[in-house]
Image (cartoon, rainbow, N blue to C red):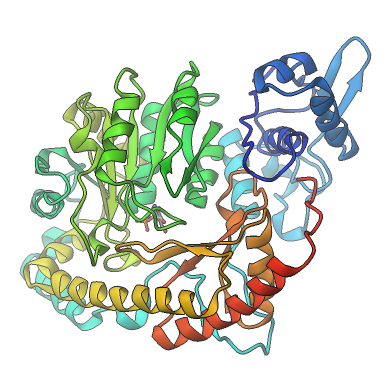
Length: 510
Ligand SMILES: Cc1ncc(COP(=O)(O)O)c(C=O)c1O
């Protein structure tokens, strides 16, 4: 029998506890962590562990049975019978032709491949406008705007390195950890947030995404648990599920990370990692201040649970003092910092990196070696040349100024157009902010209404592990100048007023 992990309930989510329990097991079944024949834990065990009544758990199990996922047998408890009507199954019928794995191929897939396939098919994309609908504002895209890319300067840097070292750079570089000159440069550029960063601590990766994958491969095995914030970066959810990991969510709100829930989650024996974005968090734009960073490190201090901090936008600060990485505050030496050039420059370079103590870096470098041998030496060398010529600093200065203007325009538009029941974060950097309405599910409703009126935002449920209804939406400012921001917020304000003043909608079961 496979593991039947216990659900982690969020009592502030505005979603019934029975619905959360049902969603948890439905996800485990669809994600392949529980297979036909596996038994759900006895009702009394779930009731005790989650501090709910047996009736609540019975209600959840009944809902799973109605959806064709489980079956109760007298004396044997409740067992998984299938993956429901909407899942892709081995040899079974898929949700749509495009999500189906061809029959013979489906029998050859590893559980990792099956989970990755399923998660990537289920991954919600940003909402699209209906054909013919004029775009008023696009707050959905987090990828930087191609119109702003310094393409000619990049071409000049590429040309220079090809001319000088072409025959060398088009071969294997044999530098698994990354080109030494790039690692030195990256360590120097991190010193404002990590004063002791050195080239020896740097491993160059194919974007931050590969760095996150490497961390999971290095520290976790299927069935282990990873703590993440709620909400959190949605592609990480997919990655965690593909690795067969249990995910524990800890709320991350206006007061930072919920310390009590974090301490409780850390008490579970199978916890192997804590993942978070301390600076300009995706999707809320919130940052932990210095006291919150210190408190977090204090909470993990007596454990051996590594932290992976995703500093994907640290260089996009336009206001305030740079805050130290958790790595520089963690006396255990068990924090890994992940960073990338995707947001500060171009995502297509697929260059990211991680900083970690040599004892952690060595196994991660070994794991990476068997994944891709090395990250492109040509692109690494061109990046070094581009930075030496001042291209990155010029680009970043202009980008930070523009981001400052856009965030100021957003706050003005919020004051002017949004009803007082709404709140919006005011980050000191990065591309994103988070708009929240007072009621559960109202963020998702706002995203849909706004889409019908030409404004694209990402509904908060995308950033929840189980796609639970959310109060919030993510606003990204990569594609909206101050005019678009004002026009977009005017419409968001109208929609928000309609939603907030309408009678409360029924909350869907899951
Ligand atoms: C929080 C976070 N981490 C990592 C990534 C992946 O970045 P990369 O393009 O460097 O792989 C993203 C991309 O949007 C992100 O939002």
